[in-house]
Image 1: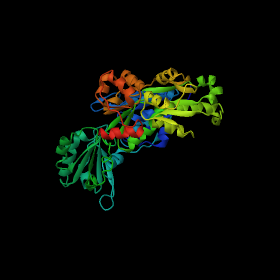
Image 2 (image 1 turned 90 degrees about the vertical axis):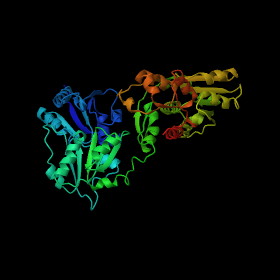
Image 3 (image 1 turned 90 degrees about the horizontal axis):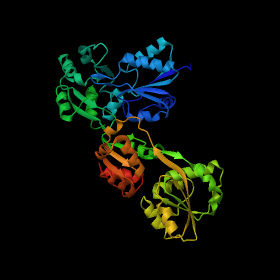
Image 4 (image 1 turned 30 degrees about the vertical axis):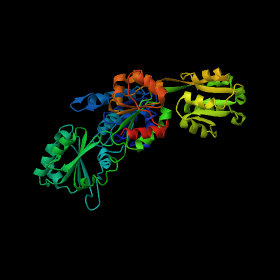
Amino acid sequence: MPKGKVYIIGAGPGDEELITVKAVRKLKECTAVLYDRLIGKEILKHLNETCKIYYCGKEPGCHYKTQNEINDMLVELAKEGNIVGRIKGGDPYIFGRGSEEALRFSKEGIEFEVLSGITSPVAVLNYAGIPVTHRNISRSFHVFTAKTADDYAINFKAAAELQGTLIFLMGFEKLKEITEGLIENGMNALTPCAVVMRGTTSFQKKAVGKLLNISEKCKLNGIKSPCIIVVGEVVNFSEELNWYEKKPLFGRNICITRAKKQSKEMHEKLLDLGAEVTEINSIEIKNTAENLKAYIKNLQDYDYIVLTSVNAVEILFDYLSSQAYDIRKIKAEFAVIGNATKEALKKRGILAKIVSRKHNGHDLFDELKKVISKDKSVFIPRSKNSREYIKVELEKLGVKVDECFIYETVPGEIYNKNAFDDVDTVIFTSPSTVRNMISMVGIEKIKSKKIIAIGHITGSELEKVGAQYSIPNECSTEGIIKECLINE
């Protein structure tokens, strides 16, 4: 029996990028993971495709699994020889029961490591514009849990006498008890107090007031669990230092549906603008570049090479490199659809001669027919799923056209089917992303969101199911970003 191991992993407070480099590296090694309710939804994207995934979250008033059941499951998976990841929100050792799990592994003789995470009391308040300490105002901070295994009561007399910042986790249901307990034990009722809900995510909300009125402020602002309560003078910085909530896409949850490799640039730019990003890779790219073998000897003889996507660029040139093909042999002019494909080709050291102004084959053909004659030859390495429009129209002009299917798109998988529920905007980049997302989450859920479609071909697929959408003026990452900002 192979020897298993458990990594107890702190995944941070919700923002998908507030996870350590080591945690990401170890998640890729896991063969089984158990994850909690409060982890960022995009954390699971770091897992390998064969990893077994188990949800063991604890909902308020309803435990999906008890702690003992979770411990038993972790032990069983490890003894089966798995590399087990126990993913926990925040830091495992700060009110996260990580020590209880670690003690069980020690008792069972199971090897384990605990990977520290960014803790929510610090990060969530930061994202709400509240520093937990500040020179001459608060030189210490004190973290309490309002919910413990034996429901042990907080010593409000001791807490009220502390001079630093007071932070209460898992205490929203006991907010009134906390504020009254502090006031009754001598703390000034006008002491600043704030409650931050679902901090570092698109659902972040806060209520700012005083001990005596914070409960009413929370009702007015629609605050509900999970929350962090903070008491102290540092709360007064909440507007001046409020950098996160001032970002242009704060509060938005935007879904990208394209293949994983093509999502990175857009994903990161949306994050930088304050959006939470839900990535559902509705398509995956199946590489069939071996089909190029029949054409590679004659590649130097074509007058034009037409590339209709970034995938086509990457797969074509990666294959040529793997075959040690000297691209200086290629004499053809390159014609491409859209700026993204143009830029991908440029990175390969080649400038496209013809670029369609719109993101579709019709526009590219219109550009091609201005310069091409029937004595010319064209090579189109493309997706098996894409339309034959350019080939058919060029052949009508008497042009010799060869095409090769160098990849095909296949349906992707969705790790967390509930992830789409929190989305307010969904971006479709091709008809296949529309079709696949419909099969994954259902058309009614899609129609309830704001929809952005790249190009009229993608839009026509949405029209078939009666979905309303908008199209960016520019079919590129920048164009999509601008459209998201317009739809703010």
